Image (cartoon, rainbow, N blue to C red; front, side):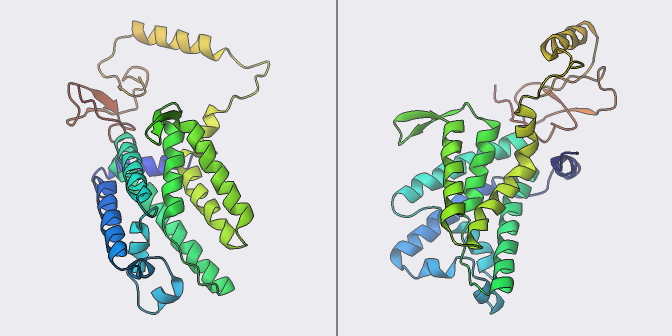
Amino acid sequence: MKDPRNAIERFCYRHPNFGVPRLMMYVAIANVVFWLLGAVNSRIPTYLVFDPYQILHGQVWRLITFALYPPSTGFFAFIAIYFYYWIGTTLEQYWGTPQFNIYFFSGLILTIVYGFLIYFITGIRIQLDAQYVYLSMFFSFAALFPDMQVLLFFIIPVKMKWLALLDAAFFLFSVITTPFPLNLLPVVAVLNFAIFCGGDLWRMIPKKASANTVNFRRESQRIRREQREQLYHHKCAVCGRTDVTNPELEFRYCSRCAGYHCFCEEHINNHIHFTE
């Protein structure tokens, strides 16, 4: 089965200027503003959340403001806002602006579709914020950087993969304890994560070896040795493919990276920029 993310990567390659650069910076600023407004008047947040009944009766701004609703309350809101700003900014640097924008907004669109379906099918006026969109964004970060450490409560060093397991437990707890059909919202958020990172996780799962399976380590070493012996003009700084091993690829140099770094067509808009 083809990875559906490939179509997204092709779109991002053809449209490198698509999306809003530094999107999470604007989201974080809006989070802080709405948190302050809510501290002044506690009724203001009630006009921000997604409510299909109110949207259909003219309050269309809720289609946008629910995504800007602060991810937490009290003082911890600022910690959560900074945490998700950092995660989103890192994902944008890794994926590139187009792909990160598609990821973020597809999560919002899936949430909106879910909210309207629940309303039209059951009549329930479900009120939503972007909590699960942010949590699915954390899932993606942990899948890409599982061994990165963060300081829990600014004291305890914890790897992202362990925090992701806690996140998954929270998702599962929500699915079990929340009445149907409201308990499907975490599933919708995980669906967005699966589209973008499911292929990476699948490839990380060890496959059962068969009699015809080659020794991957030995073969990879042989391939790298052959590549070193071949002459090439261009080599991707991310995947290591060259114009000799993959003559069908186009190679370009990134003007935003410090130094002289070459990337293949799949990674020219999908890499972390060199700073030194």
